Length: 394
Image 1 (cartoon, rainbow, N blue to C red):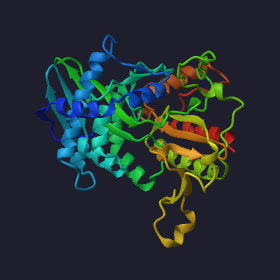
Image 2 (cartoon, helix red, strand yellow; image 1 turned 135 degrees about the vertical axis):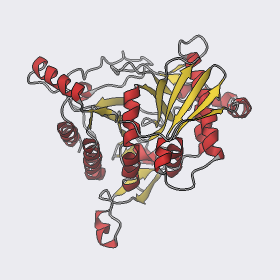
Image 3 (cartoon, rainbow, N blue to C red; image 1 turned 180 degrees about the vertical axis):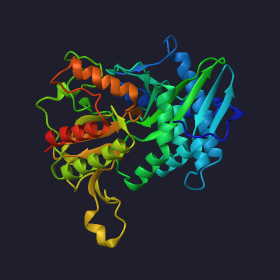
């Protein structure tokens, strides 16, 4: 399933120390520290003494050097087949960091308007990674960059192979639908310490950014089994991501944006169904709008996006998607309703409906008669999630 490789390259990595000192000194003023502390409520710094501190320090140094390569050799055009299959291994003191499909991801980041300097500063050693209490049943480790803009997650080797095999089609889908709800995958890497076993991890744009005023977060799969999270006690600083059963009785009020949202969900889940993928989630978060943020005459800008059908000709102009997008750093994952701002994104795109999942479906059918669970065919999974969205929006 893995994309073919033209052969790995191995180079000695540059040191990130000089660049990091400049970033650190410029961002560590008193006002910045106070504001940063307030925005991190419910998150935990991975500082010295934390069991994952050593690993995250290696990730930071490795990513600084990996991004330097793409800065020194910027993409000159759309990725080629070789770009999608390139593997670059950089040798550091005590560890190696692999960058998979580096030129393809560098081009994707550029197409999203993300400056490599900002990407390097956020993921490098300029500040500790952050951790939150995950409600996922996965054994993966989850991190946020210190500015909370980027999300890092460890992945199994097979999941990485699936992501890389689908990467060319994923890039094409984002080109055709620039306001797709699919999470923006920004990099895939491997970390090997002292010639040991490789740990793979991915980097994504965080759906929940900027997080300052977010009040509720949800992970929705459109089913019932194992889809309840015990809410944090009132007044607790913990940031929990709740699930389907926690959402009962609630509604997403999008107003005129609803029809666009339903159509884009249909397009994105159809794409995932064609990849034979299931078990993905719709991430959602709520944020109350301030008075001066409501309506098209305030901080919103009216943009005309490409058609959700990919329409290019003047005859198809009526099919174009018009969206009210807030003028914020993460408008790709944000929709404004009449009263609330919604952060929305589809994540976890690497579970294939193979033999193992088919057997799991059989077992769950026997164990949970008359109940809905996550492991169903990709066609049924896509249809059910779209039905959930239609039933819970207005």
